[in-house]
Image 1 (cartoon, rainbow, N blue to C red):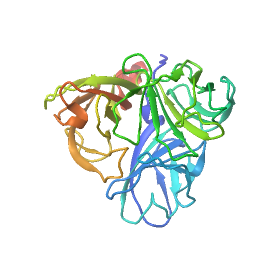
Image 2 (image 1 turned 180 degrees about the horizontal axis):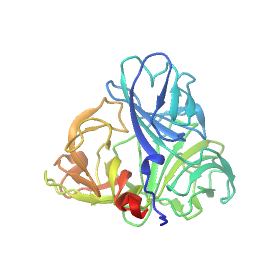
Image 3 (image 1 turned 60 degrees about the horizontal axis):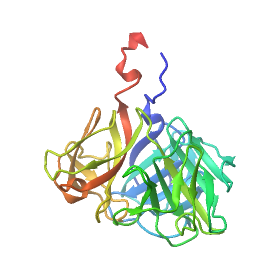
Length: 340
């Protein structure tokens, strides 16, 4: 029996926790060669560090800041078949504990000419994730091929050359295109210049975030995939018996943000101690250490909020989320082995 949905999510996304040793070490258990790794020290204050195979293992961006891209040779020294190797840099300091979140793209790159600007793309059409690198055009209208087979629900952009905000663009909120800043707490704003299609995303005007002439940009593109990922919105009720958000799978990782008002981004995952119901959270727009101030249940088919707190469940407020799966409600894991 064939399935078009993903029934082994940890072959496309995985969280791995580790403790730094201040020297060199190889981290295994990812289950694939990662194309994008998001690091955060848990035990201390320290920046989020994002590295991908398209830019190269020595090139870093920081989700909690506006910094331009930095080159660090002592953090990730290689992407490996079951994880990654580390040097003695800031993602491997002795005795500190870390979370790493890894995504699989294609483990290769291709030149994409679907748009008016040629991009370098690592795309996984099965999991609905691609990494897109390009250089801004003339500062006016342009389009860029993203390599996916359908329109992305969310694209996260960073201008690699400039000290500017991260941009998170989506049409999930109200059907028109809106933006948020990954490094900020701001409410959403309406985007008059961004749009996306099954083949490209476009800007109709200059953008410091993603379309400045001659400046390099990286984009992380996502669309929902049955059994693997879900992006959407929900409304808070201000109760410890909070809303249930159906995803169609047991979540491994959820990131959310109140979009109608000022509030932090927050992330919970299934590997750090404390989930169901007292989760440990990390804050993508902050360098703060891990906190235990949220209450969230990861269930077989979605997540249930048990906190009345403003960052996750303020009454009447609106939230956007991204979730990736541990176990799908669909697929071969729900079929007896004798029938597979």
